[in-house]
Length: 249
Figure 1: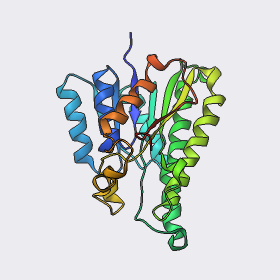
Figure 2: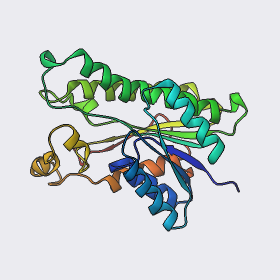
Figure 3: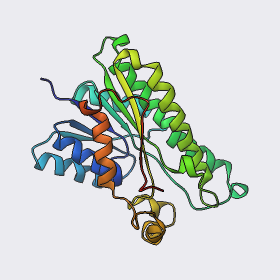
């Protein structure tokens, strides 16, 4: 059988990197997308290859349509047509109230977190759908528990962007269900990754751990296991499904 090919956006660190490593362990050929940190992406690829897997790294800003198209074309040429997509790339920003938000902050948040997921899903559907002569596939969107909680006084713009991902997951799952494509989402809670530092709160996970119902925060590996399960055949009747990975929060 031909190997399955998956693109994981924002895969140079955190949840994306752990998903890339786990998917490769399960036989997927992996395209590791990154925005700027080529050294980190190359390190993920090297780990996969050292373990006997197949992977490439590819730079693209997912919020830029032309870069997304070129990324998929590069994967077509180097690995083949994708069977899986993990829309993981996303950003947070510094904690602020809505009345402090700049339009630049809002535009960047929605461009990367929302538009980026739509653009990547579009290119994936063109390559997966039986409507377009393909054999089907699987899309997993990385949402957030913030879409349920709202993230007041921190980043309701981020929460809103992930709410959009919830709706996109539901709608796209129904739209392509008859075309061999499954669309699901994971919604992580507080996970110990580098994303908190990019939002100016490098110790957020550690500080919040005592407040969590389970007395701890989650790990990137725990989220990766759910993503790879949703990607693969063991979840074959799951579409439009949300897996909350938030420790009862």
